Length: 494
Image 1 (cartoon, helix red, strand yellow):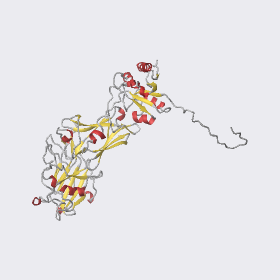
Image 2: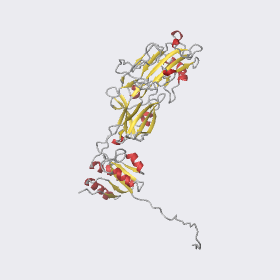
Image 3: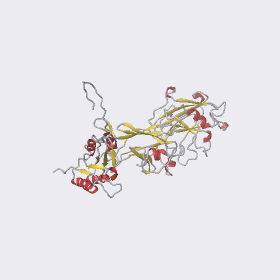
Image 4: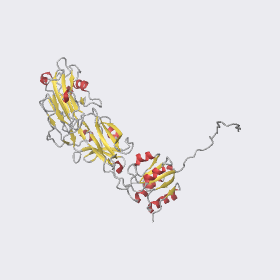
């Protein structure tokens, strides 16, 4: 070793590679009640935030001190297995979302009966068409501000396309998420008579509060004096051979969407449930005014699309872009119908038909009605309505109920946009000793029996805040039988 003969700063290197770092080898297993999260399963928790996010916050309403005990232990270690016990009263929280149809108007492919071979925007030079369009959302709010709120003008010049519907789509669009209005061309094979010479213009919002107002005139600029009878309402009873295209052509028309009946016979809706049972999923407001629990928001997108947002404690936690048309991803994958491979960590969902779970597939095209989506049951729409006006379609009319058959269906199906809808009805299942002790004869095991697993490598197990003798005796018996862990017990108070 060097001898230091004068004051100064000296560097000394030491090799400590042979020293083993200190590691906490005791993995703790905790059994207790919680307001959310997986039940009767040993779930690895690695931090206090992880614990709160998975099983919820501690509360005086929760029996025992399982969450509090886990929080304390996680101050000293980063490996805790938490088993959430749940009694027979445990129930999922849920919310109901409604289906609806979008308002739709067919634009005639023939400027006059004498020119059946011609179409607006198809033949040059005489068939230019200008449409003034106003779209109203599910709350009746006009979306276009152009022309002092009267609507947005779309001009389809002559020769835009050789096909009527494609001529409209080329100008109006509808494929973007931000679009309020679009054009549906219909099935390519075996179309109804005349639909291939026409185009269906739809408003992007579904439900009986949504509407679409269109005025048509010839030429490349809008003028009521040049109005032409080119518009028809679409109302599609099930089994309709012409997609509900009926009535006389008009120069101005306003139509309303529809909402499907949600409960009882001939009903359909989408039921969202919490992935696990618990009151912690119920949406509400805390005493300090903060938002708690979970809610669902549906927002509109262009074309067939919409988003389903899962809010947690008032903040968007998950967002799914969904559609009833296509590969079936909305029904089967994006928001799963069960816990296996569920994309969402918070919810599951399923179509409810006649108040019972329904098996459903995606629509192959937007013109399929709800019976096509869920089977051959014919569904009733509530408040199906349309209003035809002879004027400029300025939106001064109000929806008027019309008499429909009980088997009425619809086209252009979509979820109805809604503000945050709270999940409700969840129950944490705060049972007694039986729920904590669990059952070793079932598969999977429940309660504290879920800790009886050599793979977990638990060194210490406890049931914090519970002095019930039966519970403590069961934990001691498990420790003696398995010889895998040390049982920490709370003696019954005398």
